[in-house]
Amino acid sequence: MLIPYIPDDAPFSGDQRAWLSGFLAGLHSRMAMPTAPGAQADASAISASVPLQILYGSQTGNAESLAQDAADLARQHGLDPHVSSLDAVDMNALSAMRRLIVVTSTYGQGEMPDNAQLFWDAVAADSAPRLEGLYFAVMALGDTSYDGYCKAGKDIDARLEALGATRSADRLDCDVEYEDAAAAWLSSTVPAIAAVDGGGGGGGAPAAAATKPAKAASKRSPWNRKNPYRATVLANRVLSGPESSKEVRHFAFALGDSGLAYEAGDGLGVKPVNNPELVDALIGRLRVVPDTTVTVKGSEQRLDELLTHSYEIGVPSMDLIEAVAERTGDEELAHVLATGDREALDAWTWGKDVLDVLALDETLAFDPAELLELLRPLQHRVYSISSSPLAHEGTVHLTVASVRYRSAERDRGGVCSTFLADRVAEGESAGVFLSANKSFRLPTDDDAPVIMVGPGTGIAPFRAFLHERRARNASGRNWLFFGDQHRAHDYIYEDELNSLSRDGILTRLDLAFSRDHTEKVYVQHRMRESGRELYAWLEEGGHFYVCGDATRMAKDVESALHDVIVEHGGRTADQAEDYLAELKRSKRYLRDVY
Ligand code: NAP
Image 1 (spheres, rainbow, N blue to C red):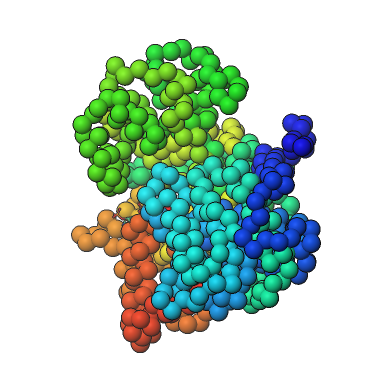
Image 2 (tube, helix red, strand yellow):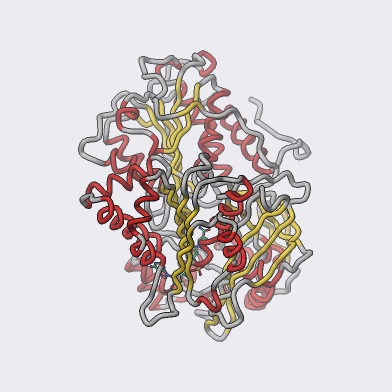
């Protein structure tokens, strides 16, 4: 039997190569794969009109992009894929479906992504329909460093089964390095689910009205997290004042001839390079020389290069913490791990890097290869883009707060924010790629009013929106709620906002500087003060956006919005919930928060 093989010099990018390998491996494994439940026919016999629903729950666009991959593959199997967010389908549409693939991320500490919550509320309710006629498979995206790993996917998978649906493939739970596993899973799951009912329509309902036929396979950018584009830094300057307790910076990157095309609302992935001082200290702690070589995935590489570019050393992995706990017998750490109390573990881990964890016992010896096995791969960081491709042609801008603190007599920094701030001067370059966020877009109707709530660096996508609306000559009104600690030091982009106001683009600007008064003033206080007008904007078709801190601000903003709807819309609390749900369903309440 032939083993699929793609020559190294074939013209494919990293992701294309991974996808193709997975696809070929899947075809290969299908030859020997047991028949899926209900499968009676080869995929080649499948009628082209057989619908496959692909529903995603996506917070930053990864799950949505995988849903499109699933659709591309489904088309190759003669299926008629329909892709949509989970929230776009109601229970009538769900009960009419025959074949379903769900791809969902998990947000925060085990929560549903914004565009899956309404679906979950309905499917988890006692009134949810029985789903005996449905064949399904779930791919869950998550991050093992957070509580509630892949919880959204696990919950949906269990609930569909409990409602009588038949699982066509075991759920796949993916950690941050998901590409290869996801491609392999899709390549076996799509044909398995296609073969249900002998690949025929099987009496299944036509595509549910709420879902749309998937777009034809789109041309992929060659630039991705495994193959980032080296973008020249055109600007790296501090926006916050010298007396600010923060350091917020504006970055501009040249897109050159990369072909990278983004839209206002998208994010930019940045591949960081670790702090060389921390790399040196770690090599010293291992008591080896920097050019020590280590064999990783069959190839010999220098330890200093690996620690600089390939492994997460600013944030310790759970594997390392557990190994050190076991080998040192440290009582405090052993207690934290034994209780399984995530908050206590987070408190213990807070501010510690790999060197701190090893410092628990300076006599503890680790072989470099052994240490690398315990570390996680160095991850890119995604920042909301603060420019508009129409207004800032050929460039992409970021607005980033540098994370800096001192602990255990060492200066520390956020892995990526200080890489950008300190180690990529203007004229130098950094590895970047686009992270599309199709769920966070301006209204297509340029007349629609827009309300934006973005304190701190949460202003980033709204700077992009405002410039985009000006460049488009959009006639719709724009209202921004912005704030930070002190007006004198933290009013970033003040000149630009004034100019946008003068030009009539920024119709209303409400500012909340929290530490200029004896009592804290936050953006949600300003929303409540102008509740009547805010409600009127919503009634006139306004789109409501939030960006920034997810844990406190976004929740408080939602409760203020709810209260505004009760007070000024003359609604009960339940009716206001329904009003909010409808805003979400119609994509007029969108958030980019974490
Ligand atoms: P920040 O820490 O959020 O502070 C901005 C302002 O919000 C300050 O005046 C702060 O006041 C105030 N604030 C504190 N608690 C609040 C609450 N419950 N409700 C409303 N306002 C509140 O600003 P930042 O340093 O720019 O950080 C922004 C946060 O958003 C970070 O967590 C970051 O990770 C996240 N973020 C995400 C994105 C994204 O791309 N999705 C973009 C930007 C930022 P006090 O400090 O005086 O209490």
